[in-house]
Amino acid sequence: MSQLSRDEVAHLADLARIDLDDAELDHLAPQLNVILEAVASISGVAGDDVPPTSHPVPLTNVFREDVVVPGLTAEQALSGAPEAEEQRFRVPRILGDEQ
Amino acid sequence: MSELIRKTAAELADALAAGETTSVELTQVHLDRIAAVDGDAEAGVHAFLHVDAEGALVQAAESDARRAAGETRHLLDGVPIAVKDVLTTQGLPTTCGSKILEGWVPPYDATVVRKIKAAGLPILGKTNMDEFAMGSSTEHSAYGPTRNPWDQTRIPGGSGGGSAAAVAAFEAPLALGTDTGGSIRQPGAVTGTVGVKPTYGGVSRYGLVALANSLDQVGPVTRTVLDSALLHELIGGHDPLDSTSVDVPVGAYVEAARQGATGDLSGLRVGVIKELAGDGWQPGVMQRFAETVDLLKELGAEVTEVSCPTFVHAMATYYLILPAECSSNLAKFDAMRYGLRVVPDGDPSAEAVMKATRDAGFGDEVKRRIMIGTYALSSGYYDAYYGTAQKVRTLISRDFAAAFESVDVLVSPTSPTTAFPLGEKLDDPLAMYLQDLATIPANLAGVPGISVPAGLAEEDGLPVGFQVLAPALADDRLYRVGAAVEAALTSRWGGPILAKAPTLEGGR
Image (cartoon, rainbow over all chains, first blue to last red; front, top):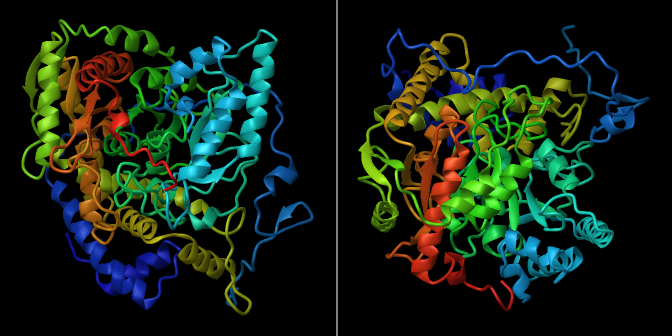
C-alpha cells in the first residue's frame, strides 16, 4: 500500500473539510502513514470467496406507523444553532464567487 | 466521608427500601464526594464534565415523595447514577468531550437516559471521555484528562475513563458508558470496576452520538457484577427508535448474577483464547489471569485452550472500519445547525466556515481518524482498505462461531497492561490503539463481554481485568461467570478490590 505524501494529506484534509496549518500537516502526515502501514497488514488475509460483513446483525428497514406524533418544536430544533433568524437556521454564504 | 458512598447500588436500593436512608441523602453524599475529590482539568480525579446538583436533588426528592406515598418505579428508584457525556440529556449539556459541542444542550433524551429517568434514578452529571469516544486513556478529552483514582499520575482507561473513575472513586454507585472497541471494559479493567458491553442491538443506541454505528454499544459501569445486571436489565430491550435494536426479550441477568454468586460453575465449558496472551503482555496481568483461570477450574468449569487465528488482525480491521464510519458520522459537525461556528475574516463561504470550525473544534485524534476514514473510503482505495476490512470482519465472526461450538464462554485478560502514566502514549497512536487489542474482536462480531476485577498486578499494585465473552444474546452467561469469579476473589481478598484503593480523603 502506498505512502501518503504531505500534499496528499493536505488534499485529504480538504476533502474532510478541515483546515490544517503547516505545523498540523507536519505532525499528522507521518502519523497517518504509520497507521496506514499497520492497518495494511490485513491485505490478503481474506480470500475473494469471503463475503464482507458491514454490520454484526442483519438489518431490515424499520417503518413507523403512519401516525402523527409530536416532534421537536422550531424553538427546540433551533436551540443549539449558532445563528437563527425567522425560525430558520442562518448559514454563511453558500455560493462562491464563481457562481 | 459518609459510609453510604462505599455501598453497592443493590445495597443502596435495599437501604432505601428499608427506610434507612433517602434518595436525597444518597444523592447529597455523592455530590459531596464529587465536590471533595473530583477537582478539575488541573488536579483531582476529574471524572465529571458537568455536575447537575440541583437537578439530581430535585429528582431525588421526587423519588422520596413517591416512596413515601408507597410507590416505586424500579428497584433502583432513588439510586443516583452518572452518564457518559456521549449520551444526549435533555436540558443538560452534552459535549462528547469535544470543543465543537461546547455548551450544547440537547432538546431530547437518549432512550437509555429516558429509561433511567423513568425508573427514578437521579442523574448526578455527565462524565468525561475521549473526544467523540476516540481513545483508550481519556487524555483526548478537550476538557483535560480524567485521572485514575488508584494513582492520579496514571490514565483511567478510555474512552469512558470518566464513568469508570467516577465509580472507582465512589463519586457514583452506577454509571453508563459506551463501548465501541472496549471503552467500557478497558477502563473497567484499569480502575478495578465492572464494565459490560452488551450484545450489539441489546441496548438502544438512540441518542448515543455515534462514533461507529456498527460497533457502538451502551452498557453499565459499576462496582459489582450484580449492580451491572440490575442496570443492564433496566436499560436493555427493543427500541423502535433504533433500527439496529434487536427485538428479543431482555434476559434474566440479575437471576444469572445471583446464581453465579453461589460459586458453582460445574459443567461450564470455558475457552482460553490462545491469541490474546503472550509476548508483550504485562507479566503481572498474565499472572492474575492465570490465577483466575485456575479459580474457574476450582469452581467446576472445564477449561480448554481455543484458537481464534484471525483475532490477531482485529486491531487493523477495527482501525479501518471505525475511521470509515466516524468520518461519515462526524460530517454532521458542520457549524450550521448546532455547536461551534468559527467565522474567518472577510465574507467567508459556508465551506470556509466549516473548515475553520472543524479545525478549531476537533482535536488531533479526531482529525487523524476522520482523515484515515476519508482515505479508506475514497475512490480507488475502498476495496483495498474498507472492503478488505469488512471481509476480515467476517473471518473474526467465524472464529467466534467456531469457538462457541466447543465452549460456552471465552476468556482473556481485558487489557494487555495496567494503567500507564498520563502522557506516555499520547504521541504514539499505534501504542495507544494496542490497549484495546483484547476487547475489539467482540465489537466487530457484536458479541457481549464483561470485565471483572482480577486483582492487582504484583509489579505496580494496579488493577487487572478479567474478560469473559459470550455468544450474541447470551449475556446472562457473562453475569453467571462474572459473579462467580467476583464472589470467589472477594472471599480470597477478604473484601472488594476497591477497598484497597486510595481513599482520596483530605481532598485530591
